[in-house]
Length: 428
Image (cartoon, rainbow, N blue to C red; front, side, top):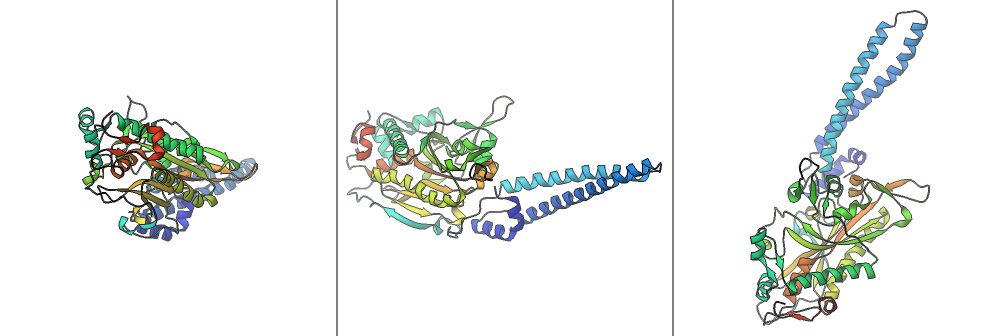
């Protein structure tokens, strides 16, 4: 969430930033509610000052045996007016809070201005897409032919956009998860976490998933109790590790990683993406989250992005890094790099990781602060997150880039010790 005082003093800048983002934000409503709130509070303070002054006059008149009825009646009316104004200020404050909770983060000055993905900027490439001597097959055809992906049985037991991984397919996902976690914990200094897969409303609000994106979430209601939400990404529980806490500054930066299943309704997806593993309602992912001091967060974003890139480099999968433009960034992000892996059947690069610096946007919503020194003041921390990587999409990339003309799949060398073999030739 944006700082209310800063927004009030920089409404023109906020309006420009929202236009660059393509976000529909009612700037006039923010201005009007803030003015109503401040006007009511100013009148309250004036009445309270008058009440304090008059209380002495009432005491003096009573001591002198004089009539203080008029002043007492005035103060009774002032008390009623103060209650009315407090209620009015509270109502305006609540409406303003709701508005601000739906305002996205401000883009960093280095973010390219643009409206759609067409305006994103390529930063770098790694590797060369394979030149296959045959027409590449899509991963769903490869997986079904090998007996390692079963979409029909998943649809029968659950519904569309779920998958059963079988034999070597299940083992390949498990191998990828272990490989990714080992890389991030042993070489990049992340602490592994196994968080809950359901969180409460406060946790979802802290990361910016609520209230704006309620339709994208799976909600779990038990009797009359408060609802839980299935996590759309481990970013949610990892970021909320320090909700409403103050971290000692000398502990920063803090880096965490977690493997979790993720659950998303994917309400806006359509077309070719809904086939296969690209957009599933349930999928596996290894997440990376960092907490930093404000002055260190942009450098931390570069490191986090390269930590995710290392996974693809070790697996020998060609990719490119894209700086998202203002109109294509996520709600909570102030700067995002997407990593896109090459998929032969699509004949293009497709997103496999999104690495974002959220600045103090999530920390303000979740009350995550740090202290500079033993007796220093507290400040809002900066939070960062990224996929390291989406496991299903990494499996897709391995199947499609490692496919052979006979339908078998070559396993990347770095993954062989985890997978227990160098190829997939048939269902196991």
